[in-house]
Amino acid sequence: MTRSITLLGATGSIGASTLDLVRRNPDDWNVEALSANCSAKELAALAREFGAKVAVVGDESCLDELKDALAGSGIEAAGGSEALCEAAARPVDMTVAAIVGCAGLAPTMAAVRRGGTVALANKEALVSAGDVMMSAVAQNGATLLPTDSEHNAIFQCLAGGKIEDVARITLTASGGPLRTWSREAIDAATPEQAVAHPNWSMGAKISVDSATMMNKGLEYIEAFHLFPVGLDRLRIVVHPQSVIHSMVEYRDRSTLAQLGPSDMRVPIASCLAWPERMETPLEPLDLSSIGELTFHAPDEARFPATRIAREAIEAGGGAPAVLNAANEIAVEAFLAGQIGFSRITAVAETTLASYSAAAPASLEDVLALDAEARIRARDALENTALV
Ligand code: NAD
Ligand code: MG
Image 1 (cartoon, rainbow, N blue to C red):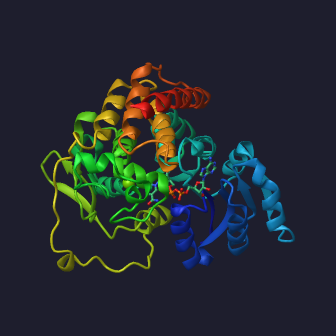
Image 2 (cartoon, helix red, strand yellow):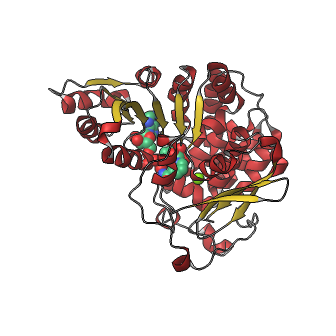
Image 3 (cartoon, rainbow, N blue to C red):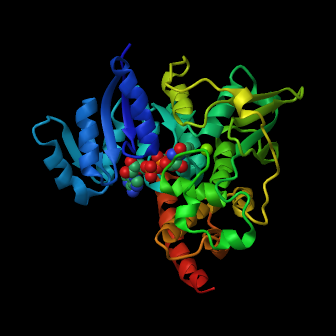
């Protein structure tokens, strides 16, 4: 049966992995909308290849270029944040939310409010909106399928189980490219070193987040919202081989783990086919050639991000949204060569400490808080850059 799909963030890393699976099963999918921030030519080429009905650039200043690139195709071109939300609200069987950052929140919420099935890769949206998104999911009867590999693993390990029977959920972390580095070497890490992930190929922002371990911090908050077991039943373990993607321990001390190649097409396929299964082009997991799976506790002295994220979700209210906004600003500044690597988490922590924001009650509240936190993070950036 052919199903319709909208892909928010089509030109990114998750976008490419999703389209690779769609391309292999062209008869299964009708593409409704594809979006990008500004890569108009690339987006237009994808829209033509997949026969999308509409292509949307988030940045309205790129709309003319998109229109030119789509001329004669019959594909509708649109631009700007409202157009993005309008496209995300069109009825489809599946929405893949793969925009990076809080920029993806409003369109993801538009898909949720329509009561659709949303494969959520865009963790920053859930970290920022938290209860606002989860209550919209419940109120509108939407289905949120976790696409982040860890959360998808947990989702799979929970199938057939009861959340009340869960004793503990363990998020695995690769430890990132700087895992074995000394504190001094970490301080001096360059953007090039920080994005060189040993196991996964991903967009620049999440690659830096993996290097600081803020990715795992954000995922801890993401897991708190997706799987209501409480913070004391969530923990993080470093597992450098990235073969076990996460685990669920039940109260009888039986632990279920999900294993697989470190390729996002596996969790994406699990979402696209859910509740069925589909083929992926990946090689079978060869455990005897992998040989060893190792585990150790995170070192929060060298990588404070997981502690900072835990403190933010423990504080609750608007703290996770502030943390996310500050981290986005700091990562951007690091990638632009404006601050050193260790300043990323310092900026996040300073911004968090600068005020206690009340819990946002609506999407508008979250967006306002996000905007305010960005201003404060830029202040913190200037101050910490001097240190
Ligand atoms: P990416 O940078 O490769 O792609 C991001 C996409 O979002 C692009 O299509 C880009 O054009 C679009 N975009 C960026 N800014 C935008 C804006 N302001 N408005 C509208 N569109 C915008 O990122 P990615 O690595 O594909 O990650 C996407 C999301 O998935 C992130 O939230 C990330 O944390 C999450 N995720 C990624 C991976 C991975 O392996 N790449 C794994 C797990 C989760
Ligand atoms: Mg992940």
